[in-house]
Image (cartoon, rainbow, N blue to C red; front, top):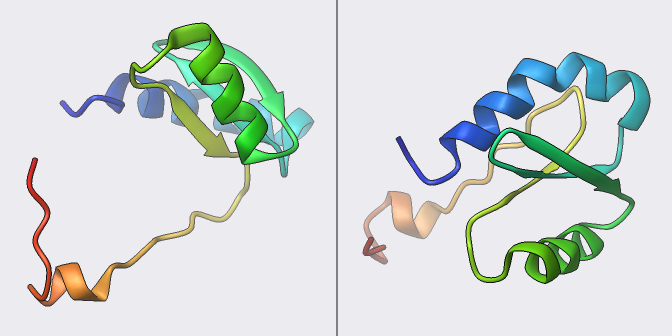
Length: 83
């Protein structure tokens, strides 16, 4: 499991319900707790930092389309990520 697997699983389990009421907003989730929604990602981030400090929490755009972010330089081995 990665750091946010629990949060992602919780979000995906409840996604249809969130789409009904909060489509287009950003959800803040910690563990299996839906904290709130925000109109801007920065607002969600600031709330997460205020509540949880420097610990992992999930900010997820509530949308029926999933966006995949690609980093071609990483994929092609031009840069390396270290965990």
